[in-house]
Image 1 (cartoon, helix red, strand yellow):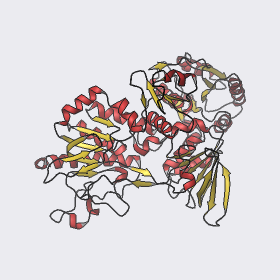
Image 2 (cartoon, one colour):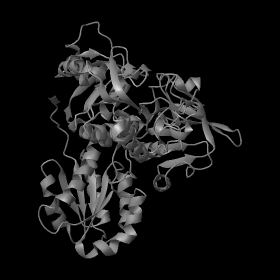
Image 3 (tube, rainbow, N blue to C red):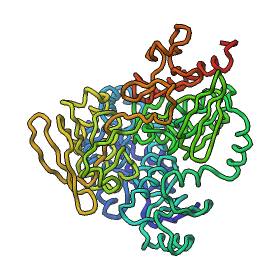
Image 4 (cartoon, rainbow, N blue to C red):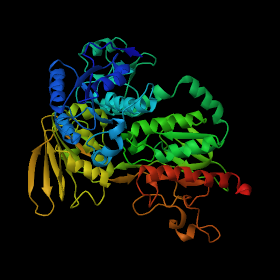
Length: 566
Protein backbone atom coordinates (compact mmCIF):
# COMPACT_ATOMS: atom_id res chain seq x y z
CA UNK A 1 0.00 0.00 0.00
CA UNK A 2 1.37 3.40 -0.92
CA UNK A 3 0.49 6.67 0.72
CA UNK A 4 0.38 9.93 -1.16
CA UNK A 5 0.63 12.75 1.39
CA UNK A 6 -1.91 15.33 0.31
CA UNK A 7 -0.76 18.89 -0.19
CA UNK A 8 -4.30 20.05 -0.94
CA UNK A 9 -6.09 22.19 1.68
CA UNK A 10 -8.20 20.26 4.16
CA UNK A 11 -11.86 19.69 3.19
CA UNK A 12 -14.27 22.10 4.83
CA UNK A 13 -17.27 21.38 7.04
CA UNK A 14 -19.59 24.40 7.23
CA UNK A 15 -21.52 24.72 10.52
CA UNK A 16 -24.49 27.10 10.29
CA UNK A 17 -26.65 28.25 13.20
CA UNK A 18 -27.89 31.55 14.57
CA UNK A 19 -27.61 30.55 18.22
CA UNK A 20 -25.79 27.20 18.45
CA UNK A 21 -22.58 27.68 16.48
CA UNK A 22 -20.46 27.22 19.61
CA UNK A 23 -22.25 23.97 20.42
CA UNK A 24 -21.83 22.68 16.85
CA UNK A 25 -18.17 23.65 16.84
CA UNK A 26 -17.66 21.78 20.11
CA UNK A 27 -19.51 18.71 18.82
CA UNK A 28 -17.52 18.62 15.57
CA UNK A 29 -14.16 19.41 17.14
CA UNK A 30 -13.09 15.76 16.93
CA UNK A 31 -13.01 16.19 13.12
CA UNK A 32 -10.76 19.26 13.21
CA UNK A 33 -7.56 17.29 12.64
CA UNK A 34 -8.60 16.33 9.12
CA UNK A 35 -11.30 18.87 8.27
CA UNK A 36 -11.39 22.65 8.32
CA UNK A 37 -14.36 23.65 10.50
CA UNK A 38 -15.95 26.97 9.54
CA UNK A 39 -18.94 28.55 11.23
CA UNK A 40 -21.69 30.79 9.90
CA UNK A 41 -24.55 32.57 11.66
CA UNK A 42 -26.98 32.57 8.73
CA UNK A 43 -27.70 31.11 5.30
CA UNK A 44 -26.10 34.10 3.56
CA UNK A 45 -23.01 33.94 5.73
CA UNK A 46 -22.71 30.20 5.00
CA UNK A 47 -22.77 31.03 1.27
CA UNK A 48 -19.99 33.56 1.79
CA UNK A 49 -17.94 31.10 3.85
CA UNK A 50 -18.39 28.47 1.15
CA UNK A 51 -17.38 30.81 -1.67
CA UNK A 52 -14.28 31.84 0.29
CA UNK A 53 -13.33 28.19 0.90
CA UNK A 54 -13.75 27.31 -2.79
CA UNK A 55 -11.69 30.34 -3.83
CA UNK A 56 -8.90 29.15 -1.50
CA UNK A 57 -8.86 25.72 -3.16
CA UNK A 58 -10.73 23.78 -0.50
CA UNK A 59 -13.34 21.14 -1.16
CA UNK A 60 -16.53 21.40 0.88
CA UNK A 61 -17.41 18.01 2.34
CA UNK A 62 -20.51 18.80 4.41
CA UNK A 63 -23.04 21.45 5.34
CA UNK A 64 -24.41 21.16 8.88
CA UNK A 65 -27.28 23.46 9.81
CA UNK A 66 -29.61 24.15 12.68
CA UNK A 67 -33.24 23.34 11.86
CA UNK A 68 -33.88 27.09 11.59
CA UNK A 69 -31.66 29.99 10.55
CA UNK A 70 -32.13 33.72 11.28
CA UNK A 71 -32.50 34.69 7.62
CA UNK A 72 -34.06 31.42 6.36
CA UNK A 73 -36.48 29.64 8.66
CA UNK A 74 -37.02 27.01 5.96
CA UNK A 75 -33.56 25.43 5.84
CA UNK A 76 -34.61 23.46 2.73
CA UNK A 77 -34.32 26.72 0.83
CA UNK A 78 -30.85 27.19 2.33
CA UNK A 79 -29.86 23.73 1.14
CA UNK A 80 -30.98 24.63 -2.37
CA UNK A 81 -28.55 27.58 -2.36
CA UNK A 82 -25.69 25.53 -0.91
CA UNK A 83 -26.37 22.68 -3.30
CA UNK A 84 -26.00 25.10 -6.19
CA UNK A 85 -22.57 26.08 -4.83
CA UNK A 86 -21.36 22.55 -4.01
CA UNK A 87 -23.59 19.74 -5.31
CA UNK A 88 -21.26 17.00 -4.05
CA UNK A 89 -21.31 18.05 -0.37
CA UNK A 90 -23.37 16.06 2.14
CA UNK A 91 -26.15 17.98 3.87
CA UNK A 92 -27.18 17.49 7.49
CA UNK A 93 -29.83 19.04 9.75
CA UNK A 94 -28.92 19.03 13.45
CA UNK A 95 -31.90 20.21 15.47
CA UNK A 96 -31.63 21.37 19.10
CA UNK A 97 -33.53 19.37 21.71
CA UNK A 98 -36.33 21.92 22.17
CA UNK A 99 -37.15 21.95 18.42
CA UNK A 100 -36.27 18.41 17.35
CA UNK A 101 -39.86 17.09 17.45
CA UNK A 102 -41.67 20.27 16.40
CA UNK A 103 -39.47 20.92 13.33
CA UNK A 104 -39.35 17.32 12.15
CA UNK A 105 -42.71 17.11 10.28
CA UNK A 106 -41.99 20.01 7.94
CA UNK A 107 -38.43 18.87 7.23
CA UNK A 108 -38.64 15.08 6.87
CA UNK A 109 -40.47 15.24 3.55
CA UNK A 110 -37.47 17.10 2.14
CA UNK A 111 -35.19 14.26 3.14
CA UNK A 112 -37.38 11.82 1.20
CA UNK A 113 -36.84 13.92 -1.92
CA UNK A 114 -33.08 14.04 -1.47
CA UNK A 115 -32.90 17.68 -0.42
CA UNK A 116 -30.63 16.69 2.46
CA UNK A 117 -29.16 13.49 3.85
CA UNK A 118 -29.99 13.18 7.55
CA UNK A 119 -32.02 14.75 10.38
CA UNK A 120 -30.28 14.37 13.75
CA UNK A 121 -30.69 15.52 17.33
CA UNK A 122 -27.99 17.94 18.46
CA UNK A 123 -25.89 16.15 21.11
CA UNK A 124 -26.45 17.36 24.68
CA UNK A 125 -23.42 15.67 26.18
CA UNK A 126 -20.11 14.08 25.31
CA UNK A 127 -19.48 10.90 23.33
CA UNK A 128 -22.78 10.72 21.44
CA UNK A 129 -21.40 7.95 19.25
CA UNK A 130 -24.72 7.28 17.53
CA UNK A 131 -24.65 10.87 16.28
CA UNK A 132 -21.04 10.60 15.15
CA UNK A 133 -21.68 7.25 13.47
CA UNK A 134 -24.17 9.05 11.21
CA UNK A 135 -21.71 11.86 10.51
CA UNK A 136 -18.78 9.58 9.72
CA UNK A 137 -20.94 7.44 7.42
CA UNK A 138 -21.82 10.52 5.39
CA UNK A 139 -18.21 11.74 5.34
CA UNK A 140 -17.04 8.29 4.30
CA UNK A 141 -19.55 8.23 1.45
CA UNK A 142 -18.42 11.73 0.39
CA UNK A 143 -14.77 10.75 0.50
CA UNK A 144 -15.32 7.61 -1.57
CA UNK A 145 -17.37 9.24 -4.31
CA UNK A 146 -16.21 12.85 -4.49
CA UNK A 147 -12.45 12.77 -3.93
CA UNK A 148 -9.36 10.94 -5.12
CA UNK A 149 -8.06 8.52 -2.46
CA UNK A 150 -5.17 9.70 -0.30
CA UNK A 151 -4.00 6.11 0.19
CA UNK A 152 -3.77 4.09 -3.03
CA UNK A 153 -3.59 0.29 -3.13
CA UNK A 154 -3.40 -0.14 -6.92
CA UNK A 155 -2.24 1.97 -9.82
CA UNK A 156 -3.58 1.54 -13.35
CA UNK A 157 -1.51 2.89 -16.21
CA UNK A 158 -3.06 3.11 -19.67
CA UNK A 159 -3.52 5.53 -22.58
CA UNK A 160 -6.77 7.54 -22.65
CA UNK A 161 -9.82 5.57 -23.77
CA UNK A 162 -8.47 2.13 -22.86
CA UNK A 163 -11.63 0.04 -22.33
CA UNK A 164 -9.98 -2.65 -20.18
CA UNK A 165 -8.41 -0.02 -17.94
CA UNK A 166 -11.85 1.48 -17.33
CA UNK A 167 -13.27 -1.95 -16.51
CA UNK A 168 -10.40 -2.65 -14.10
CA UNK A 169 -10.91 0.69 -12.38
CA UNK A 170 -14.63 -0.02 -11.98
CA UNK A 171 -13.80 -3.47 -10.60
CA UNK A 172 -11.47 -1.97 -7.97
CA UNK A 173 -14.09 0.61 -6.97
CA UNK A 174 -16.75 -2.07 -6.57
CA UNK A 175 -14.40 -4.25 -4.51
CA UNK A 176 -13.59 -1.29 -2.23
CA UNK A 177 -9.95 -1.09 -3.31
CA UNK A 178 -8.62 2.50 -3.57
CA UNK A 179 -6.93 2.94 -6.94
CA UNK A 180 -5.59 5.62 -9.23
CA UNK A 181 -5.71 5.61 -13.02
CA UNK A 182 -2.97 7.56 -14.83
CA UNK A 183 -1.50 7.96 -18.31
CA UNK A 184 1.87 6.42 -19.30
CA UNK A 185 3.73 9.73 -19.59
CA UNK A 186 2.72 10.89 -16.09
CA UNK A 187 5.16 10.80 -13.18
CA UNK A 188 3.35 7.79 -11.69
CA UNK A 189 3.16 6.13 -15.11
CA UNK A 190 6.92 6.42 -15.56
CA UNK A 191 7.52 5.07 -12.05
CA UNK A 192 5.25 2.07 -12.66
CA UNK A 193 7.02 1.40 -15.99
CA UNK A 194 10.15 0.49 -14.03
CA UNK A 195 8.37 -2.66 -12.84
CA UNK A 196 7.49 -3.87 -16.35
CA UNK A 197 9.44 -5.00 -19.42
CA UNK A 198 10.09 -2.17 -21.87
CA UNK A 199 7.72 -3.62 -24.48
CA UNK A 200 4.89 -4.45 -22.04
CA UNK A 201 1.41 -3.52 -23.21
CA UNK A 202 -1.46 -1.78 -21.41
CA UNK A 203 -3.18 -1.48 -19.06
CA UNK A 204 -0.46 -2.05 -16.51
CA UNK A 205 -1.66 -2.77 -12.97
CA UNK A 206 0.79 -2.36 -10.11
CA UNK A 207 0.44 -2.80 -6.37
CA UNK A 208 3.14 -3.00 -3.74
CA UNK A 209 2.04 -6.42 -2.47
CA UNK A 210 1.19 -8.08 -5.80
CA UNK A 211 3.07 -9.11 -8.92
CA UNK A 212 2.76 -6.42 -11.62
CA UNK A 213 0.49 -7.54 -14.46
CA UNK A 214 -0.59 -6.41 -17.90
CA UNK A 215 -4.34 -6.95 -17.73
CA UNK A 216 -6.22 -8.39 -20.67
CA UNK A 217 -9.46 -8.53 -18.68
CA UNK A 218 -10.93 -7.93 -15.25
CA UNK A 219 -10.48 -11.64 -14.60
CA UNK A 220 -6.68 -11.24 -14.69
CA UNK A 221 -6.84 -8.58 -11.99
CA UNK A 222 -9.36 -10.47 -9.88
CA UNK A 223 -7.14 -13.54 -9.87
CA UNK A 224 -4.05 -11.48 -9.04
CA UNK A 225 -5.64 -9.66 -6.08
CA UNK A 226 -7.97 -12.31 -4.64
CA UNK A 227 -6.45 -15.67 -5.58
CA UNK A 228 -3.26 -15.83 -3.49
CA UNK A 229 -0.89 -18.80 -3.29
CA UNK A 230 -2.11 -19.66 0.20
CA UNK A 231 -5.71 -19.65 -0.98
CA UNK A 232 -4.83 -21.80 -3.99
CA UNK A 233 -3.16 -24.38 -1.75
CA UNK A 234 -6.15 -24.39 0.60
CA UNK A 235 -8.58 -24.79 -2.29
CA UNK A 236 -6.49 -27.54 -3.84
CA UNK A 237 -6.70 -29.46 -0.58
CA UNK A 238 -10.42 -28.80 -0.31
CA UNK A 239 -10.95 -29.65 -3.97
CA UNK A 240 -10.50 -33.34 -3.22
CA UNK A 241 -13.76 -33.22 -1.27
CA UNK A 242 -17.27 -32.26 -2.32
CA UNK A 243 -18.65 -28.98 -0.94
CA UNK A 244 -22.17 -28.84 0.43
CA UNK A 245 -23.28 -25.83 -1.62
CA UNK A 246 -21.73 -23.94 -4.51
CA UNK A 247 -23.20 -20.52 -5.16
CA UNK A 248 -22.76 -19.17 -8.69
CA UNK A 249 -22.92 -15.39 -8.54
CA UNK A 250 -21.95 -12.86 -5.86
CA UNK A 251 -24.91 -10.48 -6.06
CA UNK A 252 -27.39 -9.96 -3.20
CA UNK A 253 -29.03 -13.38 -3.71
CA UNK A 254 -25.74 -15.24 -3.80
CA UNK A 255 -24.32 -13.35 -0.84
CA UNK A 256 -27.43 -14.02 1.27
CA UNK A 257 -27.23 -17.71 0.39
CA UNK A 258 -23.58 -17.78 1.42
CA UNK A 259 -24.22 -16.04 4.77
CA UNK A 260 -27.09 -18.31 5.79
CA UNK A 261 -25.59 -21.54 4.45
CA UNK A 262 -22.17 -21.01 6.04
CA UNK A 263 -23.67 -19.80 9.33
CA UNK A 264 -25.57 -23.08 9.55
CA UNK A 265 -22.44 -25.16 9.10
CA UNK A 266 -22.61 -25.99 5.40
CA UNK A 267 -19.33 -25.90 3.50
CA UNK A 268 -19.96 -23.05 1.06
CA UNK A 269 -18.15 -21.52 -1.89
CA UNK A 270 -19.11 -18.53 -4.05
CA UNK A 271 -17.92 -18.34 -7.66
CA UNK A 272 -18.10 -15.00 -9.48
CA UNK A 273 -16.41 -13.90 -12.68
CA UNK A 274 -16.32 -10.23 -11.70
CA UNK A 275 -16.78 -7.95 -8.71
CA UNK A 276 -18.95 -8.94 -5.77
CA UNK A 277 -22.37 -7.27 -5.69
CA UNK A 278 -23.78 -7.92 -9.16
CA UNK A 279 -25.83 -5.12 -10.68
CA UNK A 280 -26.71 -3.88 -7.20
CA UNK A 281 -23.01 -3.34 -6.55
CA UNK A 282 -22.98 -0.53 -9.11
CA UNK A 283 -25.75 1.43 -7.38
CA UNK A 284 -24.51 4.69 -5.88
CA UNK A 285 -27.16 4.80 -3.15
CA UNK A 286 -29.96 2.36 -2.30
CA UNK A 287 -32.35 4.25 -0.04
CA UNK A 288 -35.18 1.73 0.33
CA UNK A 289 -33.22 -1.22 1.72
CA UNK A 290 -34.46 -2.27 5.15
CA UNK A 291 -32.31 -1.15 8.07
CA UNK A 292 -30.38 1.64 6.33
CA UNK A 293 -32.40 4.82 6.95
CA UNK A 294 -29.83 7.05 5.25
CA UNK A 295 -29.32 4.56 2.44
CA UNK A 296 -26.32 2.44 1.55
CA UNK A 297 -24.25 2.21 -1.61
CA UNK A 298 -24.38 -1.09 -3.47
CA UNK A 299 -20.63 -1.47 -3.06
CA UNK A 300 -20.73 -1.07 0.72
CA UNK A 301 -23.72 -3.40 1.08
CA UNK A 302 -21.96 -6.07 -0.99
CA UNK A 303 -18.65 -5.75 0.89
CA UNK A 304 -20.37 -5.97 4.27
CA UNK A 305 -22.23 -9.10 3.15
CA UNK A 306 -19.00 -10.61 1.79
CA UNK A 307 -17.20 -9.97 5.08
CA UNK A 308 -20.11 -11.47 6.96
CA UNK A 309 -20.00 -14.61 4.82
CA UNK A 310 -16.22 -14.85 5.20
CA UNK A 311 -16.63 -14.69 8.96
CA UNK A 312 -18.78 -17.83 8.83
CA UNK A 313 -16.27 -19.67 6.64
CA UNK A 314 -17.47 -19.08 3.08
CA UNK A 315 -14.71 -19.34 0.46
CA UNK A 316 -14.93 -16.76 -2.34
CA UNK A 317 -13.44 -17.32 -5.79
CA UNK A 318 -13.44 -13.92 -7.51
CA UNK A 319 -12.63 -14.03 -11.22
CA UNK A 320 -13.79 -17.65 -11.54
CA UNK A 321 -16.24 -17.71 -14.44
CA UNK A 322 -18.35 -20.86 -14.51
CA UNK A 323 -18.53 -22.12 -18.09
CA UNK A 324 -20.33 -25.41 -17.58
CA UNK A 325 -22.54 -27.11 -15.02
CA UNK A 326 -22.85 -30.88 -15.30
CA UNK A 327 -25.84 -32.17 -13.34
CA UNK A 328 -25.09 -35.08 -11.05
CA UNK A 329 -26.58 -38.44 -11.94
CA UNK A 330 -29.01 -40.14 -9.54
CA UNK A 331 -28.39 -37.74 -6.68
CA UNK A 332 -24.64 -37.61 -7.18
CA UNK A 333 -22.65 -34.38 -6.89
CA UNK A 334 -22.89 -31.69 -9.55
CA UNK A 335 -19.79 -30.55 -11.41
CA UNK A 336 -18.91 -26.90 -12.03
CA UNK A 337 -16.24 -26.21 -14.62
CA UNK A 338 -14.30 -23.15 -15.73
CA UNK A 339 -11.30 -22.64 -17.96
CA UNK A 340 -8.91 -23.77 -15.24
CA UNK A 341 -10.97 -25.23 -12.40
CA UNK A 342 -13.41 -28.01 -11.59
CA UNK A 343 -15.51 -28.14 -8.41
CA UNK A 344 -17.90 -30.79 -7.14
CA UNK A 345 -20.90 -29.73 -5.08
CA UNK A 346 -23.75 -31.64 -3.49
CA UNK A 347 -26.05 -28.71 -4.25
CA UNK A 348 -25.85 -25.62 -6.46
CA UNK A 349 -27.61 -22.27 -6.09
CA UNK A 350 -27.77 -20.39 -9.38
CA UNK A 351 -27.63 -16.68 -8.46
CA UNK A 352 -25.77 -15.38 -11.51
CA UNK A 353 -28.11 -12.43 -11.98
CA UNK A 354 -28.54 -10.57 -15.23
CA UNK A 355 -26.62 -8.18 -17.47
CA UNK A 356 -27.87 -4.97 -19.04
CA UNK A 357 -29.40 -5.48 -22.47
CA UNK A 358 -27.36 -3.97 -25.29
CA UNK A 359 -28.81 -1.13 -27.32
CA UNK A 360 -27.69 -2.61 -30.63
CA UNK A 361 -27.00 0.72 -32.39
CA UNK A 362 -23.63 0.28 -34.18
CA UNK A 363 -22.46 3.87 -33.70
CA UNK A 364 -23.20 3.62 -29.98
CA UNK A 365 -21.55 0.23 -29.54
CA UNK A 366 -18.40 1.53 -31.26
CA UNK A 367 -17.95 4.08 -28.46
CA UNK A 368 -18.30 1.71 -25.49
CA UNK A 369 -15.53 2.61 -23.07
CA UNK A 370 -15.05 6.00 -24.69
CA UNK A 371 -17.98 7.84 -23.19
CA UNK A 372 -20.57 5.07 -23.61
CA UNK A 373 -21.05 2.75 -20.63
CA UNK A 374 -23.30 -0.19 -19.86
CA UNK A 375 -24.28 0.14 -16.22
CA UNK A 376 -23.73 2.97 -13.78
CA UNK A 377 -19.88 2.90 -13.77
CA UNK A 378 -19.71 5.06 -10.64
CA UNK A 379 -15.93 5.20 -10.95
CA UNK A 380 -16.45 7.59 -13.88
CA UNK A 381 -18.74 10.03 -12.08
CA UNK A 382 -16.02 12.55 -11.19
CA UNK A 383 -14.95 12.66 -14.85
CA UNK A 384 -18.44 13.93 -15.72
CA UNK A 385 -17.95 17.19 -13.80
CA UNK A 386 -19.47 20.16 -15.65
CA UNK A 387 -20.44 17.91 -18.58
CA UNK A 388 -23.74 16.91 -20.18
CA UNK A 389 -24.74 13.33 -19.46
CA UNK A 390 -27.51 11.05 -20.74
CA UNK A 391 -28.88 8.09 -18.75
CA UNK A 392 -31.05 5.57 -20.61
CA UNK A 393 -33.45 3.43 -18.60
CA UNK A 394 -36.54 3.66 -16.42
CA UNK A 395 -35.67 1.33 -13.54
CA UNK A 396 -34.31 2.08 -10.09
CA UNK A 397 -30.71 1.56 -11.22
CA UNK A 398 -31.15 4.29 -13.83
CA UNK A 399 -32.73 6.62 -11.28
CA UNK A 400 -29.94 6.07 -8.75
CA UNK A 401 -27.33 6.68 -11.45
CA UNK A 402 -29.03 9.93 -12.54
CA UNK A 403 -29.23 11.29 -8.99
CA UNK A 404 -25.59 10.45 -8.31
CA UNK A 405 -24.29 11.83 -11.61
CA UNK A 406 -26.18 15.07 -10.99
CA UNK A 407 -23.74 15.78 -8.15
CA UNK A 408 -21.04 16.22 -10.79
CA UNK A 409 -22.52 16.75 -14.25
CA UNK A 410 -23.83 20.08 -15.51
CA UNK A 411 -26.96 18.34 -16.78
CA UNK A 412 -28.36 14.81 -16.67
CA UNK A 413 -31.04 13.75 -19.16
CA UNK A 414 -32.97 10.56 -18.37
CA UNK A 415 -34.24 8.93 -21.56
CA UNK A 416 -37.08 6.43 -21.23
CA UNK A 417 -39.34 4.83 -23.83
CA UNK A 418 -42.40 4.83 -21.57
CA UNK A 419 -44.61 7.91 -21.04
CA UNK A 420 -43.35 8.38 -17.46
CA UNK A 421 -40.87 7.08 -14.92
CA UNK A 422 -43.54 6.24 -12.35
CA UNK A 423 -44.48 3.04 -14.20
CA UNK A 424 -41.14 1.36 -13.47
CA UNK A 425 -39.27 3.45 -10.86
CA UNK A 426 -39.78 3.72 -7.11
CA UNK A 427 -41.62 6.85 -6.00
CA UNK A 428 -38.78 8.10 -3.80
CA UNK A 429 -36.46 8.19 -6.83
CA UNK A 430 -39.08 9.84 -9.02
CA UNK A 431 -39.42 12.52 -6.32
CA UNK A 432 -35.65 13.07 -6.13
CA UNK A 433 -35.43 13.42 -9.91
CA UNK A 434 -38.33 15.86 -10.07
CA UNK A 435 -36.74 18.00 -7.36
CA UNK A 436 -33.24 18.09 -8.85
CA UNK A 437 -32.88 21.05 -11.25
CA UNK A 438 -29.95 19.39 -13.01
CA UNK A 439 -32.02 16.39 -14.10
CA UNK A 440 -34.56 16.40 -16.92
CA UNK A 441 -36.63 13.50 -18.23
CA UNK A 442 -37.30 12.72 -21.90
CA UNK A 443 -40.28 10.30 -22.02
CA UNK A 444 -41.27 8.38 -25.16
CA UNK A 445 -37.71 8.77 -26.42
CA UNK A 446 -34.91 6.48 -27.55
CA UNK A 447 -31.24 6.84 -28.50
CA UNK A 448 -30.78 6.15 -32.21
CA UNK A 449 -27.27 7.42 -32.95
CA UNK A 450 -24.09 8.75 -31.35
CA UNK A 451 -20.75 10.12 -32.49
CA UNK A 452 -17.64 12.12 -31.75
CA UNK A 453 -13.98 12.48 -32.61
CA UNK A 454 -12.47 9.45 -30.87
CA UNK A 455 -14.94 9.56 -27.97
CA UNK A 456 -18.58 10.39 -27.37
CA UNK A 457 -19.52 14.01 -28.06
CA UNK A 458 -23.20 13.81 -29.04
CA UNK A 459 -26.23 11.55 -29.11
CA UNK A 460 -29.28 11.57 -31.35
CA UNK A 461 -32.68 11.14 -29.64
CA UNK A 462 -35.87 10.13 -31.42
CA UNK A 463 -39.36 10.93 -30.14
CA UNK A 464 -41.26 7.66 -30.50
CA UNK A 465 -44.62 9.43 -30.82
CA UNK A 466 -43.72 12.00 -33.50
CA UNK A 467 -40.67 10.37 -35.10
CA UNK A 468 -38.73 13.63 -34.71
CA UNK A 469 -34.96 13.17 -34.22
CA UNK A 470 -32.75 15.76 -32.57
CA UNK A 471 -29.07 15.85 -31.68
CA UNK A 472 -27.72 16.98 -28.33
CA UNK A 473 -24.23 17.18 -26.77
CA UNK A 474 -23.24 14.37 -24.42
CA UNK A 475 -19.93 13.58 -22.77
CA UNK A 476 -21.28 10.46 -21.08
CA UNK A 477 -23.98 7.95 -22.05
CA UNK A 478 -24.98 5.43 -19.38
CA UNK A 479 -27.17 2.57 -20.62
CA UNK A 480 -29.26 0.70 -18.03
CA UNK A 481 -31.67 -1.08 -20.31
CA UNK A 482 -33.15 -3.93 -18.38
CA UNK A 483 -32.45 -7.56 -17.66
CA UNK A 484 -30.80 -10.11 -19.92
CA UNK A 485 -29.85 -13.45 -18.33
CA UNK A 486 -26.86 -15.47 -19.48
CA UNK A 487 -27.62 -19.10 -18.76
CA UNK A 488 -25.75 -20.78 -21.62
CA UNK A 489 -23.55 -22.54 -19.04
CA UNK A 490 -26.52 -24.38 -17.55
CA UNK A 491 -27.30 -27.94 -18.73
CA UNK A 492 -30.33 -28.65 -20.91
CA UNK A 493 -31.97 -30.40 -17.96
CA UNK A 494 -32.49 -27.01 -16.27
CA UNK A 495 -35.71 -25.57 -17.70
CA UNK A 496 -35.69 -21.96 -18.89
CA UNK A 497 -38.51 -19.69 -20.04
CA UNK A 498 -38.69 -18.15 -23.52
CA UNK A 499 -36.52 -15.21 -22.40
CA UNK A 500 -33.80 -17.41 -20.92
CA UNK A 501 -34.67 -17.04 -17.21
CA UNK A 502 -34.53 -20.09 -14.93
CA UNK A 503 -37.89 -21.68 -14.15
CA UNK A 504 -38.58 -22.79 -10.59
CA UNK A 505 -41.40 -24.30 -8.56
CA UNK A 506 -44.78 -24.56 -10.28
CA UNK A 507 -43.42 -22.70 -13.31
CA UNK A 508 -41.35 -25.76 -14.22
CA UNK A 509 -43.10 -27.66 -17.07
CA UNK A 510 -45.30 -30.44 -15.71
CA UNK A 511 -43.51 -33.10 -17.71
CA UNK A 512 -40.46 -32.39 -15.54
CA UNK A 513 -42.26 -32.76 -12.22
CA UNK A 514 -41.29 -35.76 -10.06
CA UNK A 515 -44.10 -38.11 -9.03
CA UNK A 516 -46.62 -35.56 -10.26
CA UNK A 517 -45.45 -32.95 -7.74
CA UNK A 518 -43.90 -29.57 -8.64
CA UNK A 519 -40.43 -28.69 -7.35
CA UNK A 520 -40.17 -26.50 -4.28
CA UNK A 521 -40.57 -22.76 -4.79
CA UNK A 522 -36.91 -22.00 -5.60
CA UNK A 523 -35.98 -25.44 -6.92
CA UNK A 524 -35.30 -25.95 -10.62
CA UNK A 525 -36.18 -28.89 -12.82
CA UNK A 526 -33.00 -30.65 -11.64
CA UNK A 527 -32.96 -31.97 -8.06
CA UNK A 528 -30.26 -30.29 -6.01
CA UNK A 529 -30.03 -27.23 -8.25
CA UNK A 530 -31.82 -24.09 -7.02
CA UNK A 531 -32.18 -20.54 -8.38
CA UNK A 532 -32.50 -17.21 -6.57
CA UNK A 533 -32.53 -13.55 -7.48
CA UNK A 534 -32.80 -11.83 -10.84
CA UNK A 535 -31.85 -14.90 -12.89
CA UNK A 536 -35.04 -16.63 -11.76
CA UNK A 537 -38.17 -16.26 -13.89
CA UNK A 538 -40.77 -14.15 -12.11
CA UNK A 539 -38.39 -12.56 -9.62
CA UNK A 540 -39.14 -9.04 -8.39
CA UNK A 541 -35.80 -7.51 -9.56
CA UNK A 542 -35.25 -5.74 -6.24
CA UNK A 543 -32.27 -6.05 -3.88
CA UNK A 544 -34.39 -6.96 -0.85
CA UNK A 545 -36.32 -9.60 -2.83
CA UNK A 546 -33.08 -11.16 -4.10
CA UNK A 547 -31.67 -11.23 -0.57
CA UNK A 548 -34.83 -12.91 0.70
CA UNK A 549 -34.72 -15.53 -2.03
CA UNK A 550 -31.06 -16.26 -1.31
CA UNK A 551 -31.83 -16.83 2.35
CA UNK A 552 -34.95 -18.87 1.51
CA UNK A 553 -32.95 -21.22 -0.70
CA UNK A 554 -30.91 -22.47 2.27
CA UNK A 555 -33.72 -24.50 3.96
CA UNK A 556 -34.35 -26.16 0.59
CA UNK A 557 -30.65 -27.00 0.35
CA UNK A 558 -30.81 -28.51 3.86
CA UNK A 559 -33.83 -30.59 2.90
CA UNK A 560 -32.04 -31.86 -0.20
CA UNK A 561 -28.82 -32.69 1.65
CA UNK A 562 -30.58 -34.34 4.62
CA UNK A 563 -33.98 -35.54 3.37
CA UNK A 564 -34.63 -37.51 6.56
CA UNK A 565 -34.46 -34.32 8.63
CA UNK A 566 -36.83 -32.32 6.40
